[in-house]
Image 1 (cartoon, rainbow, N blue to C red):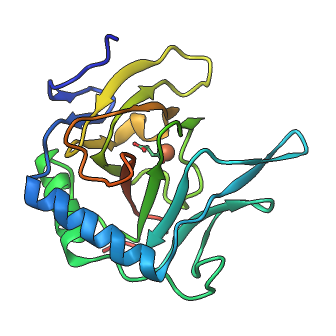
Image 2: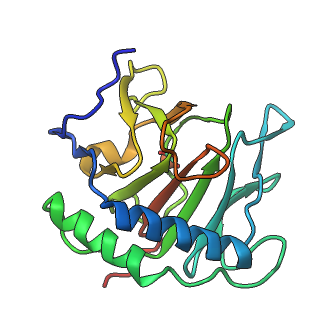
Length: 218
Ligand code: SIN
Ligand code: FE2
């Protein structure tokens, strides 16, 4: 496999891959944060309608913050309550907001109002098809992503689904930022790989996506 593994990359289109951005302590703090968020707002499997057929996502997710991303028969959207418990999502833990600030500074991007922390969980064999993040009102604010657990093959394409893709191997502790033109690029997780030393008991992968959703400023 020729995925870009451990070299830091900052591209002219605003895409950043910073391998090993998180310390071991931060990785464990993120795991603890995910566990307590999941106790209040359990992981759910979203669905989407394609050609009249309802299809289950090949991952489960939950959220922290005032707005949570969700998808079901009614489409992609942000909601202010967990779809099953009907309670607001737990607040985004300070440690995650601090990591977000440090990530933006590391990539020389201005501070941003982080309104959503989406937590994706990929069990062994799960994946996420190529898509653009287009549910936000603000499509210009960067998208931050932190990886914890199993390695993953991330495919980054262009503005058109048919554009060629580039492979990146995302490992536990890696930061990815899609800013500038790359904010709207197609991307997805083709597969995850069994990883030695995976801190997740089920050998899966967690991805924390930090986003600004509305047009409100700081
Ligand atoms: C996403 O695009 O929503 C998640 C990407 C990832 O899991 O790294
Ligand atoms: Fe995405």
